[in-house]
Amino acid sequence: MRRVAFLGSVVLACLGGCSSGGNSGGGAGGSVQFGGGGSVATGGSSATGGSSSGGTAGVADASLDVKPDAPPYVPPPWDGGDKSGACASDFGTALTDSYGRVDGTVLAIVAPADTQCPLPNNDHLVLQVTMNGAVYRMVVNLDVRFAQTDAPLYGPKWEEGWHTNVQLDYPSQLDVHSEAFSAYTMAELIDEVESLIVPGQPISVLAVSSGGQYAGSAHLIHRNGGGRDGAIILNPGSEWAHYLLFRFDDQNF
Image (cartoon, rainbow, N blue to C red; front, side, top):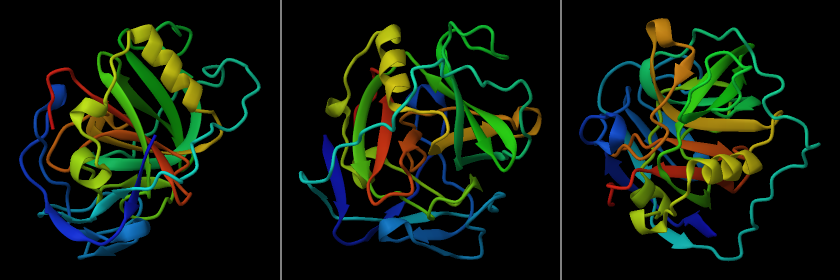
């Protein structure tokens, strides 16, 4: 497993616009610079909750190195019960029309076959995450390639809420490139992702929400480019967070 360590910082500019299917993405709101180890210095934008206003965001990247002695990620114990069993039927309204990071707690994992849960999706995995007393749907593509790595949590330290002053770029910040991703069948990818995520544990999810009537959901949890890459981040409060990364077959970086 690849482990990434901070050895310094350089500035990564945010480029392009964002769309599904892997096209490049636009910049997140607010003028922000991120330091190593998850610290954040803001330029007039909020670091927690809510959304930050427009402008061009920048992120302090790092010179990267592999740290082979970093401990492997081991999922917390699970009692073997149904991970979708606690799924909610009502969803929150706090997500804005933005790329951002949801920091919350895993409530349920809803596979396409789990039709007993509200709003199932026949080709996406749905993570239900509790954030500030409400539940939100994180919708994950399953027609993708998959990789994992470990690195410090980029952006502000983990704190429950919707953070829009964040950025992530797989190759420049995590040193993960397209050749690191493996192909899975849909069933295999569901099993792999479900095996790593445990209800009741803290989680961060980098994703895009449309806000408004869709403010209870976020999507595009895959390579988007332009500093707007999606990811599921486990163990986000530790020195080494565990990143679950996704890309489409035709994406090369």
